[in-house]
Length: 369
Image 1 (cartoon, one colour):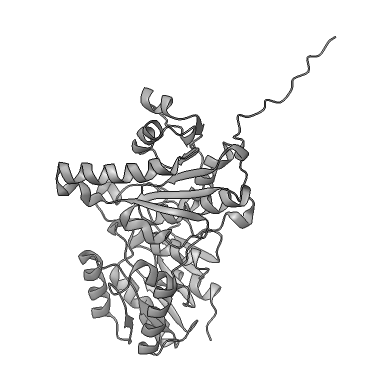
Image 2 (tube, helix red, strand yellow):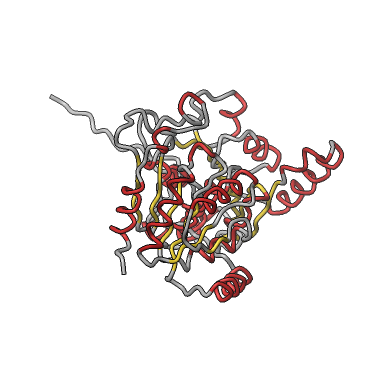
């Protein structure tokens, strides 16, 4: 009996000796952009000669602003669309001209945003990798040279999914290149030094609570946040409240402050994203929900207690950092991915989480005293 010898297929990996400049695009929200930060580090570790640029939305620029592996950081302002057709075309043309001058050899497109398809065509980039659409259009299929697989019925952390774009083209990052990278910068560090001095805070002496999210269905009830604050204060902990300047988050903060009896340092709405990161890096621990500040805590190496409801901790949990997840064990429907039960903007799986579980998770991670 004769046996055929089957040789392993050689994947169509990219020869990085022929690649000089790379454009990585991540057109999503703040947390999504921060979770893409390891892609830049991994590319630079694999081929140190590369010049790696980023393209993100303007409001998310602070997530990558001081990343040591990024050569140039370009942005798209969502306000361009509201400035009229002429102004929008002028701004888009200016951006396109700046990108064309860079003469990219590789495009790493980390979302299913259609802009990636026409960028590859207009800029004439030799190689381009993008997520494989579950239902791709002809334009999408013909616009990229490589596609990385999206999960089908399996759960995978978003960081690993981002890094799959590199694995597809022959880059297999080591663990040290998978960590989140966030550098607040000298100005943010100086401002937070002043803020801490004003409020008598020392590094590692306070617990940061960030109860809000742009998605209110991800939030824990204000009354329970207040109860946790009072319990921690009775144990001698100093509590610092942070939050976005968004009116809905500010209203939540005011409700919390109206319920607590303990003294709290309220910095909600008064910090930039970079300053928030600098503050978080000085905290003893972070307590919050699935949101960009939770990912900031992971990036800054601050132990985090993360409350999860409709979203999944497997995909979105604190990455490569000390943390505890608190989620309902009586709602088998989670994570459902819905904006509240039945689309109601209210998540029962979060609303029923007891204060005792959140407190216990924090004390397991950061003992009293």
